[in-house]
Image (cartoon, rainbow, N blue to C red; front, side, top):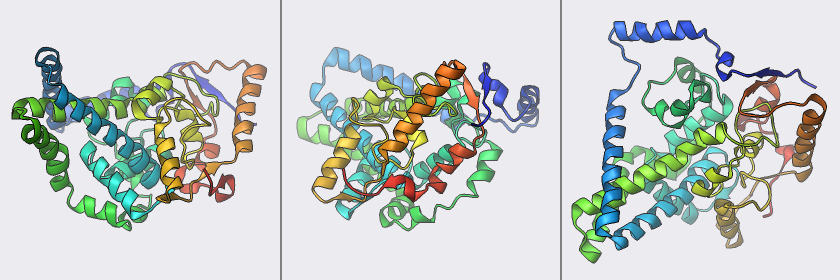
Length: 358
């Protein structure tokens, strides 16, 4: 059994001395090389101010048709992000035929969370070096940073270096990923901004400003936070029934807002599993959608973890808790990470999964 070292203060696991990091920050300021990306900060502040105005508009003018249209778009983009960017293209946990790929690619475009290639690239780096300096949204730098602050800061040098060691050629080999990447800003203008706004204007005479606030700002900010909660809350607040060695946890509330993406301790322990959760848990809508696509022949080669492997993991955790009285809490654990890395995306053992069936 590997040795376990428990850290009460999550910041103690940082590879650098906190004082050195603080001096480095002031050095950046003194030399005019700001660590903060002020363009993104400005966009986020302005976007959230407009979000509050959109909420006020809904409560005062009651544009229910436009709000309902925005809700449908939000549901579509959430499904496309979870089933497409995450489970299909990032983890290759199942395969899809061209019609399903087109459906997911269009929904991911409406989501506006960068192109599929960049989304998957950052997510694979996140899994390979989760909660380290190489992780884009490292929780050891605090909740706000993991939630959205990472988009307001320059990328850590270690992330830049280690991401170069991974192979993303499989993403560029996919015609849907490659085509969207080459024309992403056209997709963004048409799918994220113009079409969602234009439909209420031309079909039920909504004014452009109200349509902009509701179909773009309100929907966009809400769906972004839903995704960000997976990076922050689902790495800090919840249970760890499958693996105590990692920060990700099981969080039902996050799953509610993301169609089942909040069962994160399971997902980081078994990243190849297309379900991203064990069994028939609440709010696993993405899994049910993939099952339905498989039933009509659009999804196939669904990868699923051997049930015995799952039970062994849970039994091991139970034994450790009983024998060593480990407090799972919200502390970060540093336990010989070799075992976790062996199960990561780039080193998955195909003998540990069943490659077919629902």
